[in-house]
Length: 398
Ligand code: HSE
Image 1 (spheres, rainbow, N blue to C red):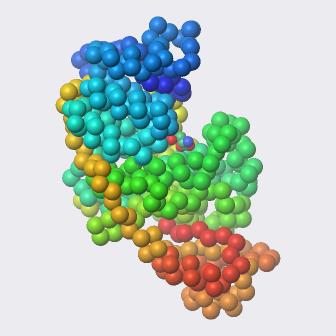
Image 2 (image 1 turned 60 degrees about the vertical axis):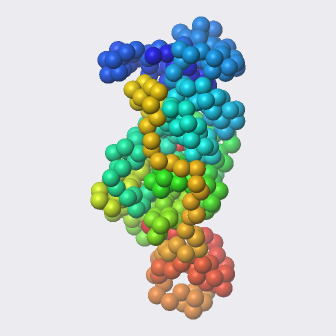
Image 3 (image 1 turned 45 degrees about the vertical axis):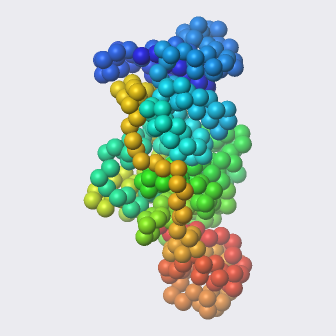
């Protein structure tokens, strides 16, 4: 079975490494060897063990009928979309690790794959090495998934864990995460929650069978979380985690990415450092959680190679997973109900006027009060804090 790899960066070269290192066991399991025939990259790699496989024009791969399987590890929507579409249209199955591509064009590429009796799979796009996509699309097909709650960004989880452990402030820990190579030079996609937003959009599309537009998901990151927020969280016996969540509401889902204060009886409380975890609630299954390395060359490449074996077992046969291009209208974010932790410079008497039965946090800081509201809808909460004023920070409870 001859394959092509498009994009020889961290993940693409990791895929070659997994295929080389575990060549024998993969052949044994599949019943034939998987061999790299092409690697598409604009750069030259003269010292690479696969140096003779490099090409610079994706049409070289499209035109070669011997290639049935293609790996896309380029990242970004274009030109990845054009290349992947051309591969599917020429009868080749594709696996990608590219969450931006899957979140934006997944349903469309799935239709192209179906029309050409091939497959488009993306195990590595969410949760890196955690096999969450196949868990949802194969193992849990007997369940209605009623809730997904995920820590699906390693960079921000690393930062929050360190802020909690060392009492560091956001800017300090971001600089450290960048120095260690966890956070990108431009960390916006991670720290503002956009990466988690795309991942929960993909997972929610798979559980609904319709297309979730990631632009419809209210998304807050961690850039406003401070060391003082963590002091309050600690005094309340909680931690702060960036959680991507989808909850079934009638025939649709309410989706949100935001930092939440989490109690120790929630399994996500215990997910620390760069690790990821996805918790699912099925109407038959109950709760289950999947935990592991959500990023990194080899865990992600391991998921890509698992996909390659799946694709090799299903050449010329489209395996339906039920992801239609029809857009799903998500539940109104304004109707979602939470308890909220609030820091404000307002007077306690004014807090009592706006929020009866508030629970106060005892941090005894000058010039501010921290309290937890009773449960209420987002719209009601927003009206009340606008009336209260002096808001320093707000974190939802989960
Ligand atoms: N930037 C992502 C993270 C990489 O930190 O989790 C994996 O998608």
